[in-house]
Length: 455
Image 1 (cartoon, rainbow, N blue to C red):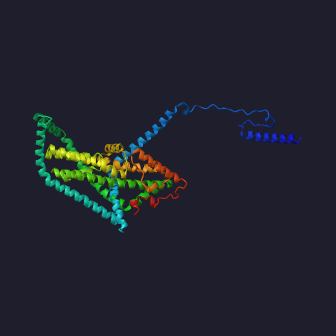
Image 2 (cartoon, one colour):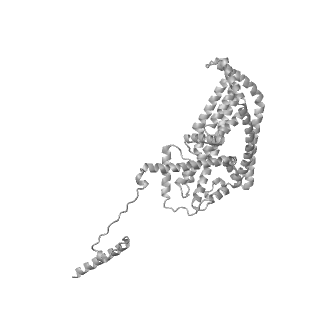
Image 3 (tube, one colour):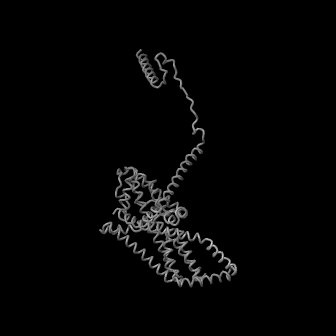
């Protein structure tokens, strides 16, 4: 009897609990009553829904559509950005040039500041020294050009005659009549395009005003970048949301380190190119050896393309001034210097500054020249290097922690095996630090600032 009573009590409690649950979950107006608890079975009501796009369209089509409208937004944003840059190019180009010059001269200003000199005095001293160096070099080049212009004129006349004789008597066997026909075509082309040349001269005169304005803007901006670069970057980082300040500041620190290394490596490579080709021109007796060396030095700031184009100019001058034999020797000198740069200097010097694939460099230069001309080709590679460093750091360290050994990302070798080894080492380092809590500091600290700007 006791067992039967206990079983009834358990069944009654179970019924009470089921009734309570049914009263809470049952959709209105249906209400479960105690009389129907043992006889009524709950019925599931299925509502028919309209078919969704996820059920109608294949997954590949949905993915392609999602990527398509996002790609369109990126293209529109890029177009608007380029339009704004085009409207403000008189301001943006001098600022970009000032950043490159600041990356070149800022370590000197920082060294003077460490020795106790005030930041304003150090920045002014570096700026004045740079101006004296540039204008002194320009003065020497102009004096050399003026002193050799008469000799060059006579040599050009003799050289053209020698080239004509080589074309007529050499392997090409071009007759004098054909040469005269080509010369007449060139003269007629110049006559027909005289109006275009005149308008080009007028536009050049207008451009000189923009160049003068940009020159003084570069000087003004460069002075404040040398003096207050760290404070300017700190101010810009404080405009961001608090969670992104440390990561952005440290990404800027590594990007600045990459830019400084790139500019210094480029200057060294350009000096070697100019010295090698200039010595060859001087030994061969080619006129304007110093101006041509300066042209090679400036052209070498555009990787791969610049030194080659300016070397072609040196070959043409040697052709018209000294003849085909000297031009062929200058061609051999230019090729030798380019091989030295491509196989020794670029991997040894530039590879330590930034590791970019040669295809990426060529495409960046081509895109920069198409978008902004010579200035675009000049800033394309350093911009790519900076973006490479910043993006790779933010992807691998979104919370703003330092990289292992504080080595800037983006300088890894492009060899797949070595890059894979270094990626495994970085993953192991991050895994070992996973147990440590992320830095709680969310303000821009001094350690996140560029090393060269924390003075």
